[in-house]
Length: 158
Image (tube, rainbow, N blue to C red; front, side, top):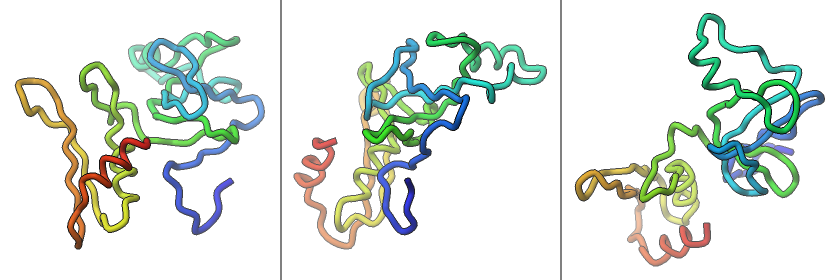
């Protein structure tokens, strides 16, 4: 449950309501384990048949449910299951970048960096540094000197 005044690393959504199923899946429609990010997909009686007058978008976002009857709606939201069985919102799939074959969520890096003592603001981008190859660039604001080893250690723990 959410508690007023409590700080969260992610945005807790909670558990699915009755007659609704929530799945967190990768791009190959495989289920992701606890704590592993993937796309939030919704199934059940609350899911519509598709978009009005948008068969292209309907085909893209509404897929056959590989785990049961009916359709699943691919929300485009990046989420993960908590150990308590809650869905936690991490951001949007379209805010991910692919670097050397790995999908990277820049917002998750920003969130982690923003928790380091002394850092007041953060911006993280993917930037082409050599040719077309992307690198992650983090811009930090702090009133004090920034210890790069602390930053590396904090990111390495995540």
